[in-house]
Length: 211
Image 1: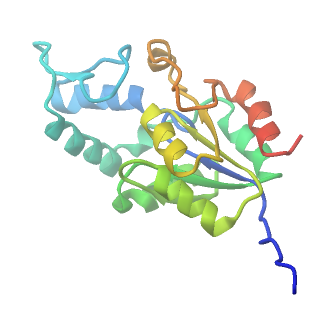
Image 2: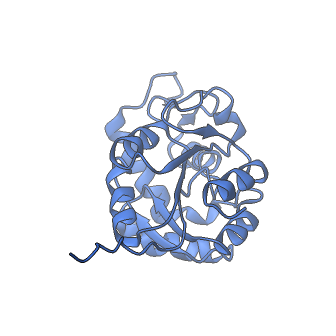
């Protein structure tokens, strides 16, 4: 009886979020939403919904927040700057692994995100997503068949989703904005919390089997 042949494995894979991992976002959104809508975004409180307030301190309803986010990604992405060390870390990781940017914005802004990252000399596959990232990560692993996978994101809800749908993926919780990182506890669904690319790089390379 012929023996079954195990499926071939591809290169290791890094799946990374973009905003507050590769590019700074919330500080620029806060500046813009104050200018454009006379609203205050509280950077030193955990969570996103509930951080946007009117001048009288009342929380802006959630249904008003999402159109403002869409408007920012439609018109204001040029404001965003790169997180220190991110480009250098991705260059090093790219020597050993494939990289996919899994970003929580609508498909309408995919071309803008690609161009935005290319301006910082970051050229990798970009996938847009709305909702939990567990299923997209599961689908990427099934498609690419990596030998090992690391997932990096700033939101605990996505680590919970990935832990549910792709439990064998290593999960790193990273929040690059210090004013958000300070009040936000480490995700209980991630394997580690590291908010600096210099410290995160060796952790990622180790899990990818590149060291």
